[in-house]
Image (tube, rainbow, N blue to C red; front, side, top):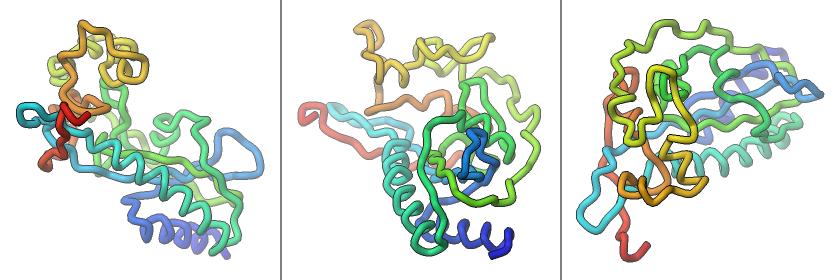
Length: 216
């Protein structure tokens, strides 16, 4: 199968699985698998506002679980439908690679997709074939330096020097949230306040999925 036909066949597999986009780059890790394919699943965030005695779930995590499960299906289809060796990987800087396909990085350190903004989940699959990379220039000067993200951050993780991982509430959730910061948790597993106020992001919101704090 010639290069363009192969690329379109791979893209169709991804879109048929309900991924919203797929971007191709050269594999920076080297080896026999020449292409890195980034599977993109967008999500619509909620405002995180739950009723008394409830807490909202960050919509990122269902999207992330979707990506994990369907990346495995995608790999199986690459092998069965197209005869291509493939494997998932986390061993690279996703954001750096994706910048070669367009988009930008915000002051909150997140990658902004040209269409979906930062409300995305990404999975990377290495493919044993050379596929023409998607090459678009990094979006320049997209951030208006409005500092809304810094003002919205509940822990002061964003300032003039950029983003500090150790201060980020989402990062604290994997490391252990200090007691002094626990009252700032407003949704399960995440914090998206810097993204919700960002003018680079889509404005669409959905009602939150909520859970009883007592049941949790």
